[in-house]
Every structure is written in structure tokens, then in C-alpha cells.
Amino acid sequence: MIQRIQTIYLLLASAISGGLIFVFNLWSTLNKDVFALDLISNKEITLKIIPVSFFASAIISFVAIFLYNNRKLQFVIGRIIILINLFLLGLLIYLSLTLSGETIVSEKGIGMFIPILAILLVVLANKAIKKDEDLVKSVDRLR
Image (cartoon, rainbow, N blue to C red; front, top):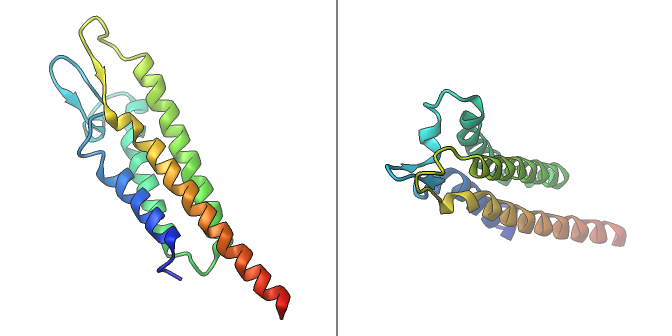
């Protein structure tokens, strides 16, 4: 069952959450671009939550791939991943609205949209998991 389409969706969600944070910046100020890993060295705890949430989403997505024997648990873990990414998206929106230094020109980066892509991929994976579960239930009814 590991060769199913939800495996591809979950693998892409894991790669996006864990890999693209190194490539795309969250925001940029006049002096430099701010990536997710730059926030670990910051003193504020709210800023340290961002890279931890990205990595938690990536690791849980990768772990969910190997739970193909227990589709119900895989579906629930997919919902947890969606909640983590929604929390992360809300936190990023909050930080972008209260970003200090707005008098200096600052731009929001494309890295703010990474949780949206991860949510989309996990929703597609959950849809495929639900389809597999319904197929197994229909086969069980025939027995």
C-alpha cells in the first residue's frame, strides 16, 4: 500500500515543509532576507515556534506515510498536520501584520505560503486515504 497516491502527497508535503524553508524567505527587510532557520537564534519564543512547527509538520508527514496499515490513524494524523499548518499560517500572518520596521521598506516573502501548500497536499492525501478506506469497507460488505 505504500505505492498509493497519498504517499506521494504526504512525501511532497514533507518535502515542502522541511525543505523549502531553506530556499524561500519569510520576509525581507532593507538589509537582509529572513529565513525560518534565522528565527531560532532570536530571543522571542514566538519566533522560535515557526521553524519548530515547520519541522514538526515535515516529520509527522513523513511518519504518516508508513502508517498505511492503519488508515484511520493515518487520516487522524493528516488532520493533525493540517492543524499544525493552520497554526503556523496564523502565526505567520500575525507576525507579518505586526512586523517591526515597517518604516523601513519590508516585503513579505513567498515562504509565507508554504503552509498553504502543505495543507493542500495533506487534504488531497486525506481524500485518497478516505477513498481507500471506503473501498476496503465495500469489499468487506461483499464477504
